[in-house]
Image (cartoon, rainbow, N blue to C red; front, side, top):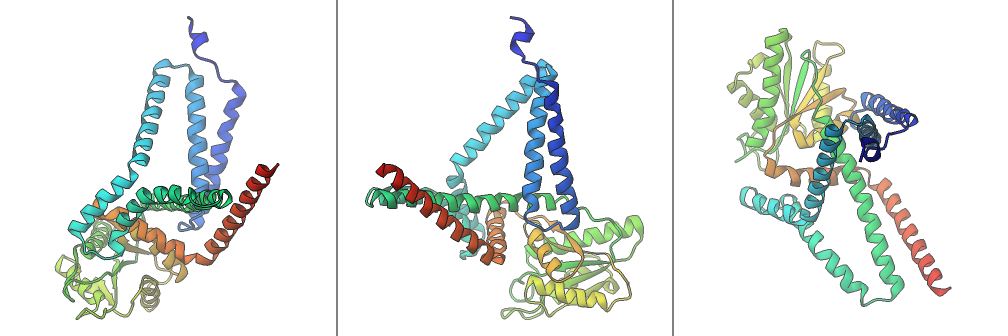
Amino acid sequence: MNDAAVWVPVPAMFYWGWLVPLIFGTIFGWRYHRDKVRLGNGIWFSLFFYSFLTMLAITILGSNIHWLIIISETLFVLLILLIGLIFTLQAFLLLWNAWIMWRHESHTLANMLTLYLGLAILILPFLGNLLSSHVPQPVSYFLTVFPNLVIFYLGFWFYNYLTMLTIYQFNWPRLRQDYIIVLGAGLLDGDRVSPLLGQRIMRGLRFYQKQQRKTHHRAVMIFSGGQGGDETVPEGQAMLEYAIAHGLPATDGWAETQSKTTLQNMQFSKQLIAQGPVKNPRTIFVTNNYHTFRAGMFAKQAGLKADGIGARTARFFLPDAIIREYIAIFVRNKWWHAVAMLGILIVSLLLTWFDVYQASL
């Protein structure tokens, strides 16, 4: 059998398809440059990414380079198998993560989200099947359609959130910042910096030191956090003392001690910056990597022009933290999502009515 019988050539006109990822990529780049924390940008990136992969596959097949085609097909099959395996085992992976969280973190509702989600994935299908077998057929149809559409909707926006959170991690601000805001978190025993908060401080301090070393441009670090009901000192003050103890010159550190929320972190830090000597200052903020995207939303809401950089977080903590962040972002737009849920309900009722109508013919 000759090669032409095995490898079907791709028509030259198909290569015009490269215009599709080029257009989507340009739209995404323009939108992302204007607003890095717009969740809808994830849709444009996905359109670019998957159209790019499609055109790459077409180009590889059209190249007639056998070894490249074989390697590409093998990698594609392995990727599909990996995705299928993760999807199949998702409930058990979530429960495994919940067990690790149980061992290392406090047993609060916020720290047990992977446990509840894993149990829901395992139990709800059985409950749905059991319920469907004891109700009239139209109700059973509705109980199948409506939850699946809701899950698809939630999953769609969760995927967009993960996409944008991942892209945001590649934010590398230039070493010419005037202010570095470090966002606060709860203190241990009322006055001690926790390991998680310490990661934030050290991430900001490393950026400060790198900028000083390479550009000799002085930056001021603002440590932002008020005093909680179970704390004996404001978070900002404890953070400043921690940073000074780890090498920050006292003249290059300010403490913002009034804020109670991330939004207030941004608002009150902006007020301090406005009182400083620099006009049109360049500013970044530091938080943990899973929190950067939502913190960027608060910076935008406060009118603070600042991008974020993320401190490392323990891997076992990430799944629960990411789910918690997604829920918080989802709730920020609760009325918009409520309208969407109402639309899903109406569509589900219409599909149920159409199914009943079809059955009656």
